[in-house]
Structure formats: structure tokens, C-alpha cells
Image (cartoon, rainbow, N blue to C red; front, side, top):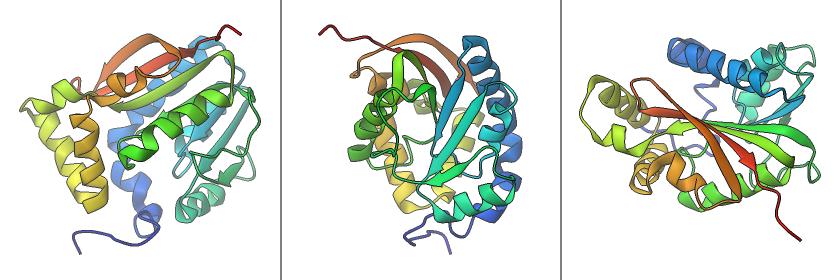
Length: 215
């Protein structure tokens, strides 16, 4: 079946997710671990953590990692692959079950583009809320201009997003139309520290810092 319309869009693919996308994600996951390790953060919340592979890698670079995802299927896979470290929770990225300023860093890896545009800014606001002052938000997602050009990497990305399902692909297209990851982050109280292009420039690893707002 071409499109998956179940409530949990990852119910079918969760057991095979790492095997299917592992080769594509491996270098990106190592890059995320390196980047967060360089910042000297102590604890990280991996928002929309999926099967938990990235969170487990981060466990070697920081003191504390927590993974959270709304997909029960993904959390089940993540929990099977660990003995309680790091912990994985089921929850909504728009309403995180943590107090203000609970973490040094938060990660949103390929999490924004797959959601409806109405979710993007609430997800970013929640990620910033749980960060301590000057905490780091690391977002890995698509850069719009390179993906609008023709090329092998662009065609591969579009193919993967098409196979992910109708709703997913529609959100992906809207994400590009809105300007991609850097444009969407631009409306929030954060300072972009660096943008590291990945996968022939179609993806950006965007490191930003939470601004301290004057009272």
C-alpha cells in the first residue's frame, strides 16, 4: 500500500526503521553527537526521538539524555533496545512533561518537516521553554533552496519523503514552501550560532542559542 493512514504513522515501519534509514542517518547522527559534545552541555532532551538510536549515541557524550516521541510503536522499539538508559517517554512535542529550564540542550532531528505547519512553532516554543538560559537548540532538517534545485540528493530526498506517506509528503512540501528550517526558526527568540550543510546541502544542522529576554 502506497500511503499509511493509521493514527500512528510509524506503527508498520518502526521495527524496520533503523535498517531502512540507518545508512542515510549514520553520518548525521555522528555529527549531532559531535556537535552537542563540543558545546559542553550536560543534559539533552531528544524530542521526537524515534527508535532512540540518536539518544543512545548521545549517552556517550553527555551526562543525561531523555528521549520522547508521540509514536507508541517507536517508543516500544526504543525501549526494547535499552535497559533503562536512556529513558524513553511517550509524549507530545507541543506539550512536553518537563518544567521550564530543565535541560541544557534540546534536539529536533527531522521532526519539524513531517508535521503539519500548525505544529512547527508550538514545537519550537516548547523546546525553548524547557531550555535553561542560553541553552542550545539543535535542529536537523531540510534547507529549502538546495532542495528546489535538481540533483541526485534532491531527488533521493523527495523520493524518501514521498514513500513516507501522503500526509508526511504534504507537510514536507509545505515546509519547503515556508522557506525551510532556518526561515522557520527565524521567528523565535534564539540566536543561530551555526548552520552545517549535510547531504549535498539539502539538510542543515542548525545550532542555536536560547536568548535571555529582558524583564
